[in-house]
Length: 244
Image 1 (cartoon, rainbow, N blue to C red):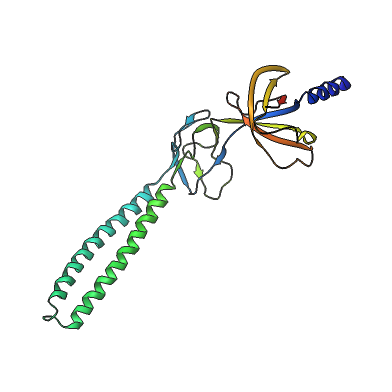
Image 2 (tube, helix red, strand yellow):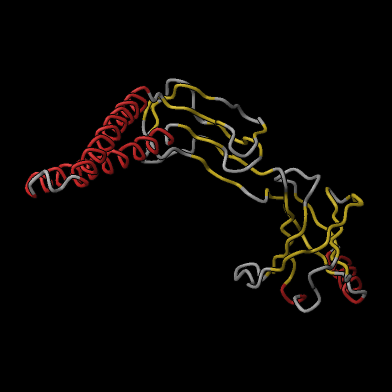
């Protein structure tokens, strides 16, 4: 049986065909976690749900962060009004410099500069509070499907990591095609790979779009990549690579 298989493979190679195996993977996979700690307030998705890029996946209780942001914005609003008042006052005094002594003008200028510096620090505090609040929400970094969910409402989330809260896989899939490295000169980008699953030809062929430069040191195999549209991640089988 083994001799017959080798004979078949050698004959196919003479015709320009190369035997290969494949597995299907998502083009993009991500293990998602939070860059903040807190109690889960809302879980917006479940296993197998399809999400768009930017879709909300999870939200932590953010009452404290929202209050901090409101206080920072109130401080910034008050300082903005104070700076506007002092700036107008200094402008009037400066235009009437002959009426006021230099010490008065210098004192007012110093007070204005101090308030402007305080306003800038408060503006940065608002930006920091907004950033901190944004970290209480987890959104999808790309469109795809939830392949794993490990969180529920009321759970405690830590920014220190651990088990991913979600695993997300992209809609588009790719074929990772592996073949004997001795056929490296025969396989080119643009060649067709026609697949079989469970020993049966599917009639599906995809063009090789990428050939990885390195050889697997254990298996002595090369890896190429082709479009896997229509196949679920995890699908595997074999097939033949034919010259374009």
